[in-house]
Length: 308
Length: 323
Image (tube, rainbow over all chains, first blue to last red; front, side):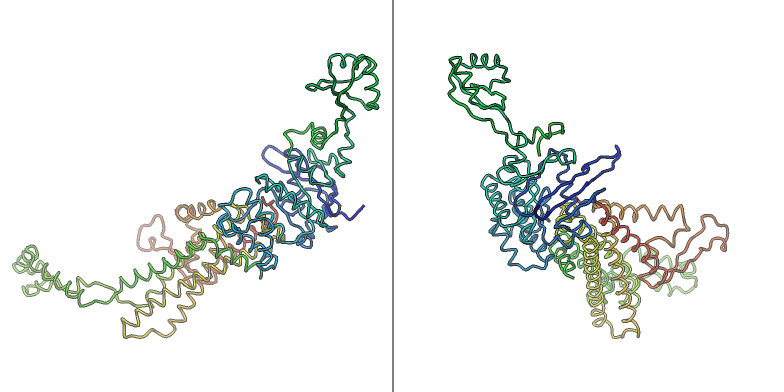
């Protein structure tokens, strides 16, 4: 296995309030290898953002271990923070300052000069609006500024929590391309997103969590493959007759508009042979492929709330 | 050092803080204006106006009636039988209408400085509170920690920036106020200043600047812990308007631990508290109990109070999750 950029072992986070104790992250063991884009999925309240916040030192873990670039965090966080860019939840900047001033203050914290600020403003397409006050920015512009802030460090690891939130379609496409380019250039990107199609499209690997624990992890194809559907979709002139013939042969099936979906792991040729034997000819036959959404919904079926 | 520069730049860019600093200078201007107006020398116009008032009042029927009554019965009005004394006693004089104190810097140092420093202290508390309160409100503290995760460093840089700004503001306002007053004194008076005056004034200014810096740190420390500016403003108002009054009423023994008394002791280089008995019967039992507070007492008091606030603030900031 390649070098792990993010590693958590039995990570735990508890909150205490008047009602008692609430466990947000329950023994999460996560591994994100070097390079590529790694999706981080889970339903609302599954502990994704809490995990990210613990990794970045914004929240204190109640138990377990965390490592970034092999360094134990939060103890050694200062050693790796210069290599780690991040956006956590909503962008948070001083509303009365211009976008440029907000970035300049962060750049000065890093000991950088104005050239890097110009560069990241250009990269995220904020040139021309960088001298406007942050409070006047649209959600999409705020998101771009946050991405610009994360890029100030020229990071080796980029942790992005819902980075396309609020962006228009063109902006979403640009950011996805930026993420892909970064992933391909050797930067490790941890992408937490509620848009499952986006994760499937952009990510090389994915980790799915629910109830604060890891449910599945690995390359996107493998994760989808573990839940691969054996169903096929059939097109027939006479659906009723075809359904009767297949049911009589013991197949499990359902009607899907003007098609039949047959649950089977057998060779599809046996279906066409069976139907042809009864005078019914198949005019369409396609395998039903599982997608990330299907896998996600299956894995997190017992979690409250929708996907996020 | 880099973090301190970032915090100073952040303060300079905050409009609310600049308004408060401008307010401090405006306050200084008001102090100067009021002081110079109250102590302005008598001009020829003032004298002419006073003489007109004397004439008008002398010729008024009421004054003349009173004068005649006096002349009829001088014993009752002047205590002598000399009717000529009535004019002196009844008729108005020019100096009645020119009752104006003479500008005397050594006499002014104490009261003017105390009032000025206390007002500046309140402004500094607001600067400390609003600076970090706005950051918590915007959530930018979390963003900053993504760039510098060492929380004690971030905390210390912000504290140092506030202390520096508050002290510099106080020193600048104090200096401008006293330069204006001394300039006016140089023009209006032929007398020089007593030896040691400038040294005392400088020391008072230095103590004032330190007091204002501590005020800024207190505002910062509490806001850093509770994360809301409004809470700090509320606490400050509650303590100054109600808190000290209640404590004085019900617990007179805590006088020496009140902020106001220690502030006076610090700024004035000593202060005497007088606690009057609730019930007394004669001159002796009605005498107040006097407690002398020195500069060292006030220094220890503010050192302990500010130190405790800052430690709690640092501890809370270091431990609590940041949104």
